[in-house]
Image 1 (cartoon, rainbow, N blue to C red):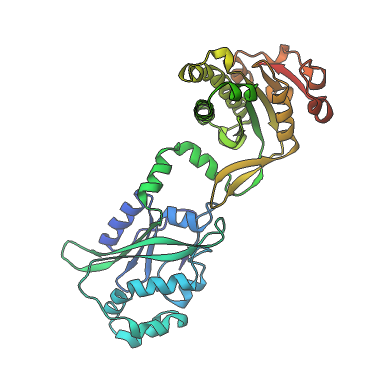
Image 2 (tube, one colour; image 1 turned 90 degrees about the vertical axis):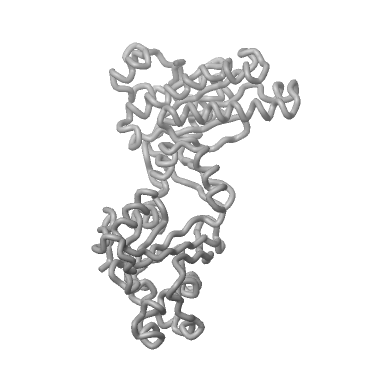
Amino acid sequence: MVHAGQESCPLPQDPALAEVAVALNKARAWGQIVDVDWRLAYATDDLRLSLGSLVARAPVPLGLHYFGQEAFESGMYGTVFNLRSVRDALLMLGPWLLADTPGGRDELRELVHPALRDLIDAIEPDHRSIARADSIPAWYTAKGAPVRLLFTAWRVRDADGRLAGTALQSTPEAGMAVVGTMATAGDIGHMARMQSVARAGRRPAAILFADLEASTALARRLSTASYFALGRRLVRAADQCVVDAGGVVGRHVGDGVVAFFLAENAGSESAAAYECVTAARALRTAIADVAVRSDLSPEHIIMRFGLHWGSTLYIGQIATSGRFEVTALGDEVNEAARIEACASGGRALASKDLIERLEPADAAALDLDPDHLTYTPLGDLATATDKARRDAPDIAVCEI
């Protein structure tokens, strides 16, 4: 049967296989289990999510022969694996598969996909080994070219030594040294928020723009190495403030930082606006520490902040072989940039659209009183830029 629900696969009936299934799923591995007859008995949640392009758990054909035509045509391999991948997997696992098939080569030819039958004569049965490893090709839309996955398999036996089936696990070819370094440097909550926008769509969110003021003069004053170290410290501090507040880090452009605080992640529009203001204030506080660590006075590092609300932002991931980030499109993104450019002198300017989304409790926690604030149209500010007067002169803002 094809298990297409979003709940976890039911555990295999065999106790030994069920125990391995629980362990693989708990380890969040890309794992599968086949029984002694090579019928698919289990697939982990993370494998199904990856095969479903991080949007939904892909269906899996439980109970079907792992190399059979029906399993292949069910969409079991998603868009990641194709027939070439399956042929390589059969060459790796074929010695066990042949050993487990009572009718030998003739029966195995009938069980596997017709496009695999030419491989059967080249396989010799293996009754003795307990583990195998190789790499197989896979295809990822983001990369647009074949990549290889490390594929490991081991035999599963119960306490009496009875063969119960085989466990299959795959990992990125980069290896855990590289993957572990990348993963441990990131925040798990932030990764989950990035995953929540794997499928691009319209999502209301608060927008934060922050940029270093007078960066050109500062770059000329400092050595290249010192200025690079300063920029790295600022980016790290900014990202940490956004992550801690519950936002999603966007693009880094020059000395600028962009972040989004989605209502669906925060729980409400008010909570998203609250997170945005909290992140901006936290970064203003963190700047002093960045200055000290860079042997500068706090007044030498001045950042502008622009906060705005986007009701119809189109937010999603951009994933390529060289980067992985979240970005957004919409007029409000450009407007937020115009607000930030007008916040010279280290000010934080927030739009009326953002502030008036705060519920009383969230506003009070921020020591703001939206009912008694006064606003100034962006075009009327003494610090208004030409682009702000041209593109967003009527957006009302206040200093927070």
